[in-house]
Amino acid sequence: MLTKLVEYHWAEHIDDALLLLGRLDTRTVPLAGGTYLLGLHNESIQAVVDLRDLELAYISDDKQGLHIGAMTTLQTMVDTPLLKEFASGLLSRAAHASSSSRQIRNSATIGGTVAIGSASQADLLTALAVLDAVTVARSGSKTEINLSGGTLDRPGLALSGVVFKGKQERRLPCASFSSERQPNELVIEILIPPLIAGCGASFARVARVPSDVALLNVAALVEIEEGSYKRVRLAFGGVNMLPVRAQAVERLLEGQLVGKPLDTQRLLSALNEGITDVRFPGDARVSSGYRRVCSINLAYRVLEEAVGIAQWRGVMSSEKGL
Image (cartoon, rainbow, N blue to C red; front, side):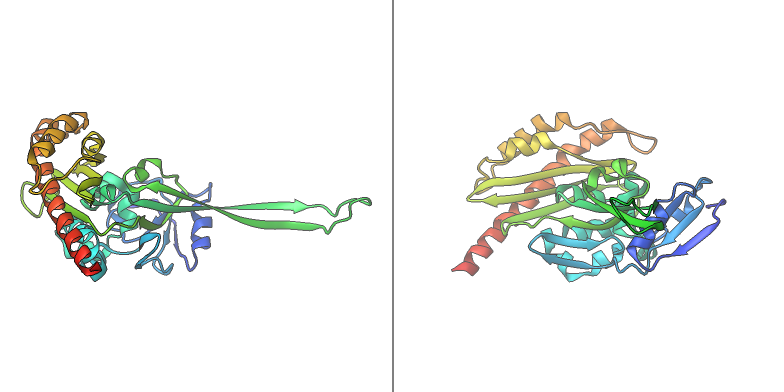
């Protein structure tokens, strides 16, 4: 519990929330779904800013890509038809896997999930990593200055106590945002770049029981163009673990022929060679060795499925163009 909490603010505008979060004399944090913050034992937090009225709960797409407002709940992501289609339903499935409790998914938000990182224990973070998702974060400040009345040569109007409101916006990868976030920054939305028609994605996880947090999860995204891997993304995550990309595997596959049927030997060779660069952390629940042993089989399964979906989508899109 927040035992030292003395202020509760209900912000009606983003700028108001930013000014409150930017205060130096009072430790102030944003309150979104509250699933993490309200159970936190932190005596340094003195004030919270409720974000419910900021109209940050939305899901839309345009030429820039897919936009998901920071206050969008995980259950909304599970239920929204657009996300059930986007990237083979990767975001919808990962949001559902992030918590077995519908009550928590009804409260937990994507902005809060990204902001706290591995502490959220959310499979959604791994899915965002393979989609190259970025976090749009904004910070604000308030500066009060006094302007003199000028001189005879340079006359001016005397203004006392003028308040300037400034704000800054940054875009950072979702996978690393929690470690790079500034204390006064507020997550505004998650932006996911557009995907091509020949795109497939897949997701898998290992847990002690299906309702438990993932000991290891993996997500893959494959874009195929003219029979070759145009873009490959592979990421691992799990309990107390930030998503980590298998970039060596991605480089070994990109530009190579996919093959029909799938060239499984090339896929396995790239996995065996490239996955050695991935560092799997361990903790009390799962060892790094266990994660490494599981990683090859899980990665092969999701890559194989993603390739199959990408090839099917490529055929369907070409038939529509005829």
